[in-house]
Every structure is written in structure tokens, then in C-alpha cells.
Length: 242
Image (cartoon, rainbow, N blue to C red; front, side, top):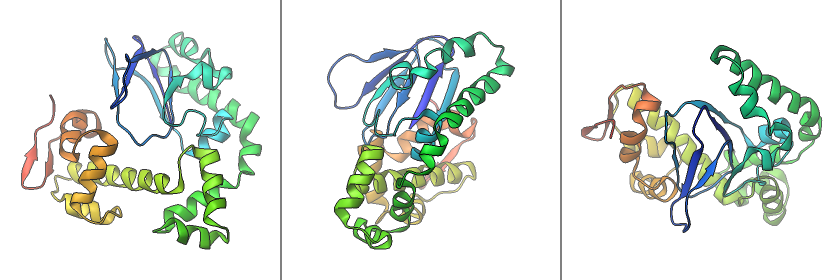
């Protein structure tokens, strides 16, 4: 789950495979999703971007990650207490905006943290991260697969198997960036370390979830995630930039 608050122009969010115009939003909350989304801005791409774990969303925002699952919504609609956060950030100089954001999230933690700590989903997600299969995670928890599915869907808005797909994707993304920063080649190694059957499996999942191949993703996102350093993947270097 993530929050994006641009400094100036609203964000346009378009979803791959979905009809209709791109939505324009002042402050965006995006839930867990397995499809590709494209974010566009007219002006400079500056602002605040926060990534929250499912447990963090419950503790800091007071809402389950299932609330905006599969979509992007206005922050004010999902968390009314933070409706004025974009204006509060804009009113402060750049050096003070981190403090404004932290104060807002800590206030949410004071309101919701104790209730979030009692949620049973933490153990369920930990078991799904450790286990290779959903059935194995259910055995670790001593519950049925149906019960595990109900808990995860209620809190995250995705099934246990979909959550495991997201975990593998995030693990691969982190390793992909680390390998590119180090100038190392080897999508096969990234795939194996992240729990994919092979490089082809990684590429299929990446295309399904990001709308492009891993190499294409680095070409588009490389300047932001690598700080302008060249990325090396496979036998040929990936040329960063558009």
C-alpha cells in the first residue's frame, strides 16, 4: 500500500487493461494490486511518496489494506483525518515537510496502533512468506486453508496465493535493483533467489504485474532507482532513460 502526494500538479492514474479516462488525484492512496498502473504528471515529478506494509496501514491509517485494494483513491476518501495533509505539506518549506508527515502518521499510530497490534493477520502473513505453498502456511498456523484465506482477504483484499505472488515480485524487484547497482548480470540468479521457477517464470510474472519485462522496467525506472548509474542485465547493458 502506498501514498503519493505530488508537490504541484495532480497525478493521473491509468490502469493497464481497464477502459475509461485516467483519474486525476491530489493525493493518492494505492492498495495492493496485481496489475500494472501508470502514473503521470504534467509538471515536475516531485512530492511525497510513502510505502506502508499491510500492518503499517492498519496501525498508522486505521484502515485495512483491503480498503483501497486493486484501485487508487483520494487520500481524503480513505483516511478523512489526513484530508488536509497536502495543504499542510505545501505550507511548509521543503526541509520541514518530513516532520509534518511523521507527525501526521504518529498521530494515527496513537489512535489506531493498539487495535492494530491485536490483528491476527501478522502471523498469517509471516507464515505465507516462509511457506512455499498456501497449504503449508495453513499447517504452520494450525488452521484450515479456508480460514487463512478469509483472514488474508479481509485484511489485504487479495488471496493468500496472490499475496505470495506480490511478495516474490517485491523480492525480485529489490534484488534486480541491487544487481543493477552493482553492475552485475543475471536475471536467472534474481529469479532463483526470489522463489521463481526460472527466468522465464520471472519474466512472465513481471510482464503480468508491471506491464513490461524486467529489462524494460529498468530502462524506464532506472534513473530514479539507480541514481543515473548504468544497469547491466544478461549479456547486454540496459540503456537507461527514454
